Length: 500
Image (cartoon, one colour):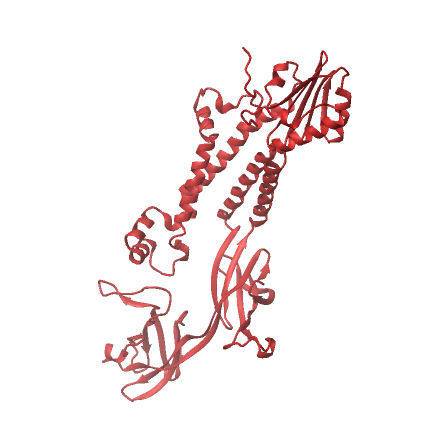
């Protein structure tokens, strides 16, 4: 009994490996990774995990010197405890997240191969159908009596419509847009390349996302590189009143430009070699060999150091001055009269723990504290003193001969530079371009096929497309007019399941 259901034209009878019976571990793995449902679930899990990973700052971006196991519970409570326990604090570098991305990549490869091979066979081994039942089981089908053989005329018309022809006597196959069937697979290739481009970031030297603060006049190492950057000076330019129309009134100063005049050095044999000098402005970074320094912030008039007078309490006189940096204090100062001051310990954000031992809550100098030792001819064995912001040090060590009195502050500007290296970015852009090509091919191009058979005075015509059936019917109506066929567009569509 002949079926009247439309034929499934996706693979035209070619079997996919995933549909065959499994005979081993490899076949089971193939079935698992070739499943579209499995791929969708893995992508959904990766998306949900990525969203959760952005709720709290990742470990490398937390503004605290506390270890992660203490920072998250203390800062975010029970949620932070769970967040840390599940490994979301370094999600994008965790083994299971990377493994999930690799599994998605494997799924894309196997899904593509599982469908690519049967599709390739179906498209490149097309036979001219001789059985009339093949025509009748197409969604678009027409038959009519025709005394004169119209196949030659139809072939000419179809050729003018840019169809590729294959003919055996009065059997004719015309098709165009076959390349559109490869759109999803080109899209898959692009997605696989995107995953590989992202994975390049885990190779040392391929990706860097850091931040560095540099004081005016300071030369500082660029994190994660062999380069050093010097902040020659930081400038802020403001608009003048004449730059605005008279009708616009401005309240206060409006910034026109933030700019760091910088010099980039490279460390060569233990010395610094100047390799580039330039201006760093917002959206105009300093670039060298894939390294980008972006203007990202500034902190004007920041307290950089404390100036302290060393007072001899017995003689009640000032015997010298030292300058203690809040960020990188010198370890030793030599003063007049053979007096030497050593900095033994420094706590930028001073606090006492439960055992009454000193520690620093962060690297930010919110409450700087120093342990210093003063050695002089009168005190050759040395004496230790605490210098703590907001605390009278003389009360802590009343029996010491020397005390430190705050005399002034050193104020400086500093600039914030974002450090970026992303050598996988060109590959990522190319991959995204491939994805776009695949999407255009898959969504906007159509694979159209027309079969014609003239047999015993009857013309049989069938057609199929993977999308835009209305467009195909309109085109067939135009072809019929040119070939003088009494074909009505309303008679073409037999309905039924829309097979690909």
